[in-house]
Image 1 (cartoon, one colour):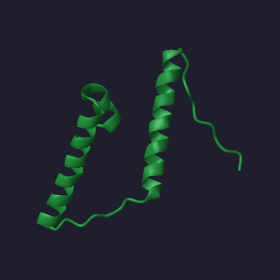
Image 2 (tube, helix red, strand yellow):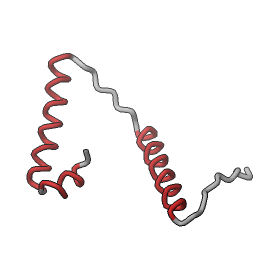
Image 3 (cartoon, rainbow, N blue to C red):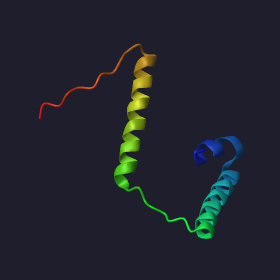
Image 4 (tube, rainbow, N blue to C red):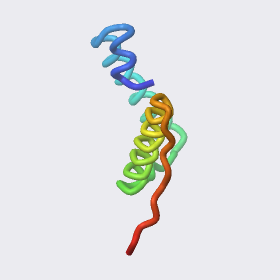
Amino acid sequence: MRDRTLAARVGKAKAVTATARKIAVLFYNAMRFGIDYRDPGADYYESAYRERVVKQLHRRAADFGFELQAIKSVS
């Protein structure tokens, strides 16, 4: 759950504490079980962001009764 969503429900202080605990548990488990952290890289986050934005745009267009279609690039 995102920190902002949690903060809206339980308050900012509890959301910060919950997020800190979540990070601490992840770190503890990584150290205890020897799990290597592999950063997926900026490209992964950029593509995930793009997919999320496109999905939101499709949903908003559908709310207005429109349908989005991909265009083919001319290059």
